[in-house]
Image 1 (tube, one colour):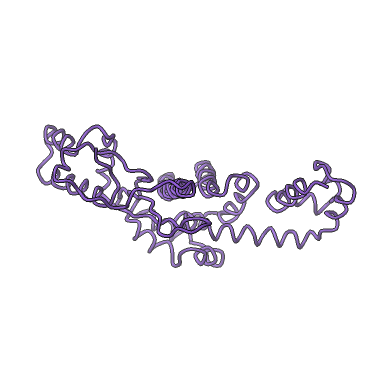
Image 2: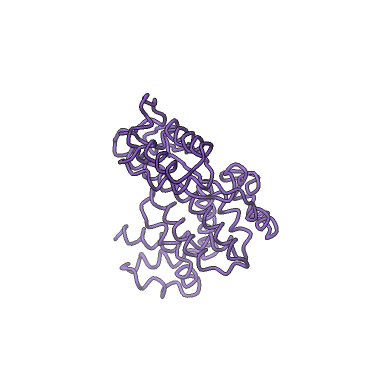
Length: 305
């Protein structure tokens, strides 16, 4: 008797809709691909299809209520699309669920991005902005998972804030670990206020009852206050099972984005200011750039050599 094969079959029945539907029509034929003996096939053949379907539906809902914590803005936007909620459910399948637990949320997000990129949305600009929001949330999901993996291996993690040295302007700066950056159409708080009447699992339940309307989606995606969202994953609670991770965020004007490309661990803030000054940037802009880098350093988004 192979418990491993039985576990694999039960897993597939829960997360492979095609297999589950075939099992409902012809149970014995659906089991032929699995190395089961006669008694094991008989055990599976008496499973009620309606009970199996209910179990699968409940599991998918519970998983999505957890994934919604990582993608609240995206889930709300997708709920407004034709078949959007069905799309989210379809991605809780064997491909997503066979990935290691810490990688499932990011695998789901990457696959969702691929699906959205191929969808017909009335306005191309809307799709572009929706994907930019997903990329911001996906970046935070990825850094959060990477931080959890490091903590679970017993590695030390840098503190979220560091004291600035007096010569911070002239010291080389680099991007700190577990930091992501993405441009979003408005402040993250404003987007959450417009898109998320609830958070966490309650948001998923709300969207199932009351999906975002097309008009609401269009109104939000017409916002024009683009910001670059910089986020750093931090451990807020350590347990023996899995650490809890939150994100510290800093939001800067969209024009700051190209400057982050020069943060490579070799140059300093002073170097960047000098280059901008030589290009004719006014003093007010230079002051704003310096203040932006100071804010990133104060919040542990950057490292100094």
